[in-house]
Image 1: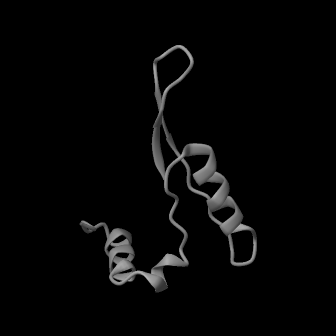
Image 2: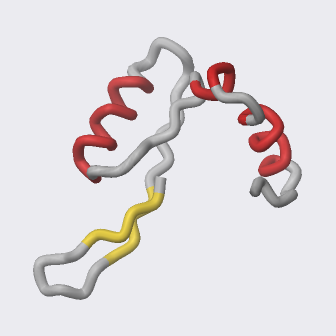
Length: 68
């Protein structure tokens, strides 16, 4: 997840967070917390089985190929 956030002094920063965990270790809770804190979307690996083409995109990314 990457978000551009405004700092109090107006400079702004880019925030990138990767939260990795084994199944049943609170990964969905982390996803929900990150979405609430940043106001953005956070990807959960559960979505691989729910989204057509997601597995192929992850394989391409792991191999260094374009995903779009």
